[in-house]
Amino acid sequence: MHDYPGSCHCGAVRFVVHRQSPIAEAVECDCSLCTKKGVLLVGAQEAELEIVQGQDDLNLYQFGSKTAHHWFCKHCGIHVLNRPRTAPERYAVNARVLDAFASLRPGLTIIPFDGQNHPKDRRA
Image (cartoon, rainbow, N blue to C red; front, side, top):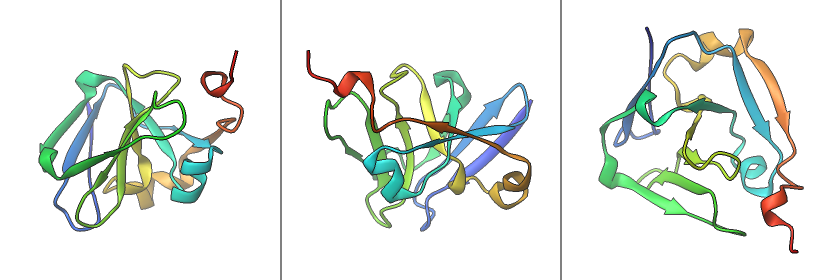
């Protein structure tokens, strides 16, 4: 088991991602919000994410189709995780808030994602 602890900037929100395999890739979404936040996203099943502190310190932000749920710390404003439009049953953790990000980053494969043209934002 590979455990990846992380936190927001002020430390009010702490979590651990528990994975069977090491983190080897992250998604770089080009939607307006992800671009402005500058996040790299690492997927996690619900059972793989453990919020160990600060659940009540997370605020929700939604926009557009309101399918995705974006959580950030209400104290320092750092985006911690979201439930993406493409897989709302999963989490996407901001890789940049993982404690080991500096050592993970050189080996990460970055996968681009076209969030600007997401099918759930198209009108019928």
